Length: 190
Length: 190
DNA sequence: TGATATTCTTGCCATTTGGCAAGTTGTAAA
DNA sequence: TTTACAACTTGCCAAATGGCAAGAATATCA
Image (cartoon, rainbow over all chains, first blue to last red; front, side):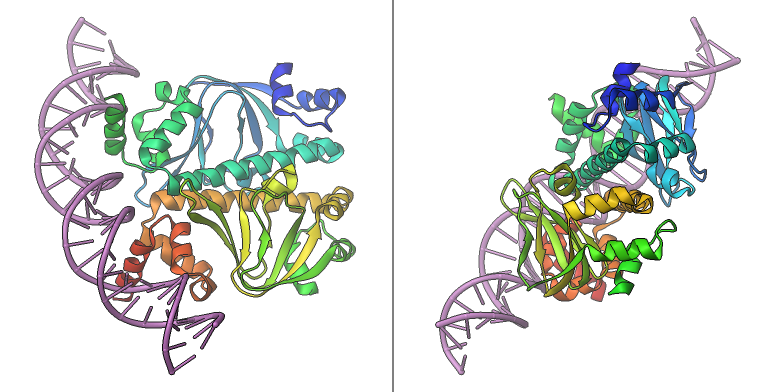
């Protein structure tokens, strides 16, 4: 458990003692495959650290179809920042694709500790910076990479997805139809 | 000038006094059309508030072609967060598309004040939250919207772009070729 | 195990977008 | 004003992707 937190909350300004205080606001929770962690329309009041499992975020488009916006794997921070920090209804849903072991952090507990530890603040800013970068990279990939390359990249980064996420969910994440992704897979194997 | 800062640094926890202190770390700078504010490979040591003008961010792809990643207009915060906060070389370039009036903030000045004012910290987190949301929205638009709709949306949000950014730059931002965007424009007018 | 629903693949064809090249328009400097 | 260069448009055809529907494979649950 300590290794998990040390891995996530890495920052030069965070001491051992700080880490202990941070670890103390985490509480283990279990979700079963198919469970919903956050439903659109509700205000998120917590974030999670995913110790083990696979989770996806999705929204609905005009037709009511689901569009997968993110996949979370081991050691990822599972969060809907807009809802948690603006205290506003979430547009995104969080759903467990496998049984999951997570560590939950309540907003109030986080908020208090956050403002007490300058290192925590710095860590948070770096976390946002990293997030921003990777989301921008995703936009860039949509522009610069072919659908096939986007798929290969995703495989490399999160291979677990293949085993647990149905093709349709992966396809919507990559911005192609399930039909196209099926053909892409065929071409790759050939 | 005060109105500009009040508009940008809006947060319930920021008092008049706080705002004065924040305003004090800003210094006016002028850039001429075509000037480079930040060149790829360099470490950003400042961010800007754009009082007046148009700026774009771009990267280079494998072929050396420019891909526009962002447009900044009046009242926008012009920043490359990864470079500024991770103190790492920027992959992005910042270029003035028109003459620009900006207010520069040096990293060190920002950093000191940031940690002194809890309201500033909260403001910063909300700023990141908003950014994350809009960048995610951009990815979603790449998936859910047609090229034509993406163009119409951009027009609505930043109409200044049309007058000052050449078609090729807008096209790469939208993820289409300049040929296609030219046809899209034609279809819209018809 | 058997029945049912979901997931995945594939063929056919339509639509969208790209690539290239020629020509036109617009702009800026000599 | 002339020249040169960049910006934009357009025609022709190729490539990528989508839409639909049928069928095969797989998962799920009583």
